[in-house]
Image 1 (spheres, rainbow over the protein chains, first blue to last red):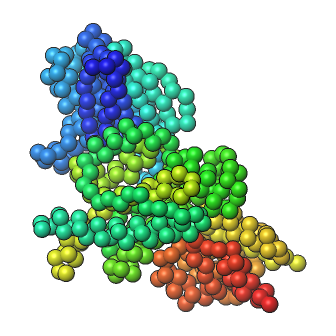
Image 2 (image 1 turned 180 degrees about the horizontal axis):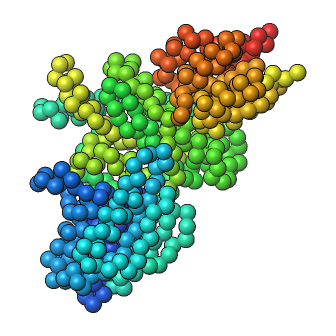
Image 3 (image 1 turned 45 degrees about the vertical axis):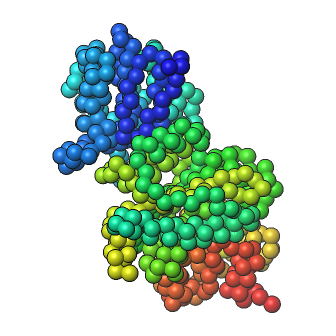
Length: 161
Length: 201
Length: 124
């Protein structure tokens, strides 16, 4: 695999990888959750859309990555299955959850942020960095060599987390 | 032919007529020909569709969202590269190209109004060719990453589905290499309504 | 004395386009611009213009409702509706209510002028 190979993660998707890979995604009201093991240099990115699967939980065709409650569990499970890393080895960085469309009552972005925070607390995964909210999109690049994330909010300069 | 194939065929017919009408009114609005470059009805996996836009690196866009409400609700999206929206503003205002240099309310409202006019052209096709009553809601405009604009567009439809049925088209403004993209997404009970219309025909 | 016009449309570009046409023609002053029907009703009562151009699809209050309220206030009000291609049901309703004329988007400058001039009796 080429050094620094970028792999895009679409909406309602999870990708896991290891050093030499850079997971990338673009967010609006969706939240991008990066989980990383500094000791093993492996991790994954979940691009989730909604806070909870709710009634859809019973649906076998469900894309688990769509929802925070099923997606976070799936991301942890995939990292463990792929690399043998336990959740106690993981740290989190979260991004996105913006309210891009104005004049809409529901703030899904804010709901996603709260849902992810609660799930990380429940799983005892510390949040090392968080850049969330606002009204603009986010472009993030998660480097699995270093665990660092470059985040660029639309209209702003990129920042490293 | 099963029901979903029939629905797709019906949507293809709607697409042919709507996209044709939309390109005519776009040309009339900016006084420059707009050629149809793409016309497609397909089922899109939400992850793959959004990933494809990320990878294509369309950059910044200005997009107009319109809800088409009525007998067969659709969601409509029209977007153009941010730089090209400056040129479209000059064309709308009949000014010399290069006059508009910054993103102001006239640039965003150019895309807003083009979205309104094109969405109305689509509802006109529904009314005149299919006797289906629809009306456009006031457009919402967003200037952001292309993936963000597209992601917010499919959010509601993608909430309960892994795959969404979509009409996609692309126009090229001749002599200027400006690409405009237009999408129609059936929402609510539209597919069921279409299926029953096709079955009754 | 220039005729006093208020333009009403949620798209600033449309208000600008109409203003440019009227300015180029001469004899017309755009004294206010409104982005929805509610503002249009308030401004009409405050400024009592000679004519309004009124979009139909707008947030908060649409052009039909605004037209109704303005005509209730002043049955002699001159209102030219500005509509995109397929708002014909709304347009017919507007004409029945008492709108003076209509312009269809996308519009040409001379169509705007002839509608405004005809409404104000300025056509020679």
